[in-house]
Amino acid sequence: MTDYFVDKRMKILVVDDFASMRQVVKKTLISMGFSNICEAAGGADAMRKMTEEDSIGLIISDWNMPNVTGLDLLTFVRSNNDLAKVPFLMITAEGKPENIIQAAKAGVSQYIVKPFTAEALQQKLEAVFSKQSGRGQHI
Image 1 (cartoon, rainbow, N blue to C red):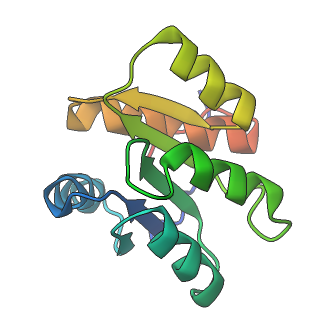
Image 2: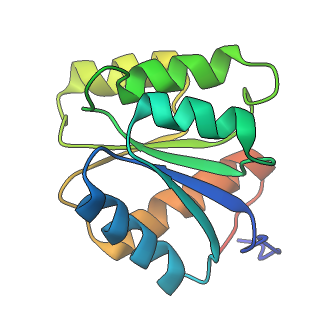
C-alpha cells in the first residue's frame, strides 16, 4: 500500500441522537489525530449544520434517529450537489443484510455495526479514504 497525506484538520460531522455515542466517536477520532470535529444531535440538526458550516470532509452518522434517520440524511447528502461526494460512514445497530444493501444503494461509503472498537472505526476510515483517492492509505 502507498502511504500519503490525510488532512487531519478536515471538518468531520458526527451525527447521533445520543450525546454519549457522539463522544465515543469524537474521542476515537481525536485519538487518531483528527482535530476539527463538529456534532449534530440528529439528522435535521446535521442538515442545518451542513448548510451553515464550511466544507465538511467526512460525515459519520447513526442510522436510527427520530424524525430524520441516517438513511434520510444519506439520501439528502447524495442528492445535494455541494455534498454529494462527501464520504459518509454509517454507524448503526442495524446489521441485517437488507439494511446494509439499502445503505449501499443509497450511496454509503462504509458501514459499521455497533458495538465497535476504535480499530474497527480506523479500518473503516482507511477504507473510505482509500476508495475516495483510488489508492491505499494509512491514517
